[in-house]
Amino acid sequence: MDMSKDLVAASATPLVLAILAEGDSYGYAIIKRVAQLSGGHLQWTDGMLYPVLHRLERQGYVAAKWSAAENGRRRKYYRITKEGRAQLAAHREQWKTVDGTLRGIWMRPCTV
Image (cartoon, rainbow, N blue to C red; front, top):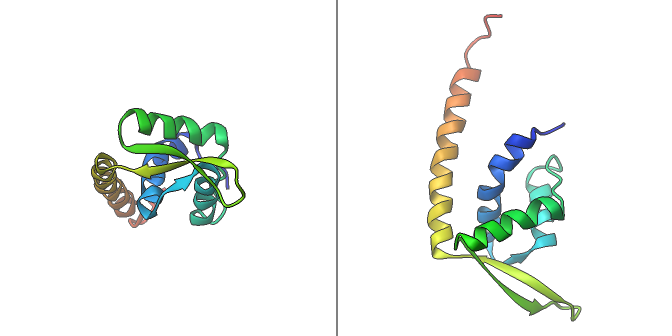
């Protein structure tokens, strides 16, 4: 299924914040988690994820630090901040409204 770029872009911030609310993570793991959560329908790339992470970091919603992975390589780990958790709660309410609205209209019989 082809996903609309607009829909993917609109869902990027709440998805990243929700994943980081599960625990600290790094880029590749976030990309894999998105694919897992979407059943493979969302296939993010580095070029899609990192601008989102950098914007969220500038906004104070995530913080980053370099750390050594098990294999000895350095990775940049991201964590959600208190402000990010508040932003995630706001996004959750907005998406509930959108979801409820779409469900309401899609449950009606089609008149076409």
